[in-house]
Length: 75
Image (tube, rainbow, N blue to C red; front, top):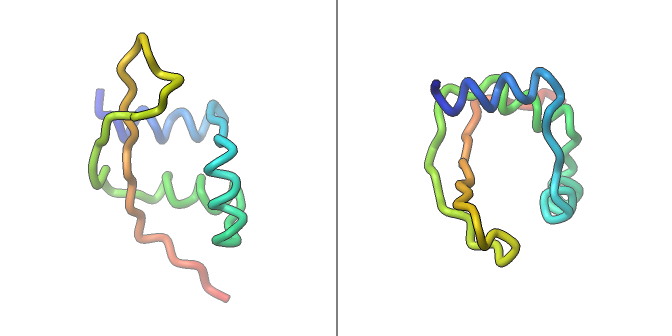
């Protein structure tokens, strides 16, 4: 199954959590969880896939997906 579809389904079902780093970046960029969910749901493609370099991931390979979205905020 396409990875982006799986990610979108997880977002729709509410099956996601934000890391502390993500929350700090969201606060810095003045973004809410709803903003992030909207961006993921309106994305057309995954921009790139990178392997996680987190030291807490020793036994299992984990990939991080960079998603670019056309979502624009109207003020």
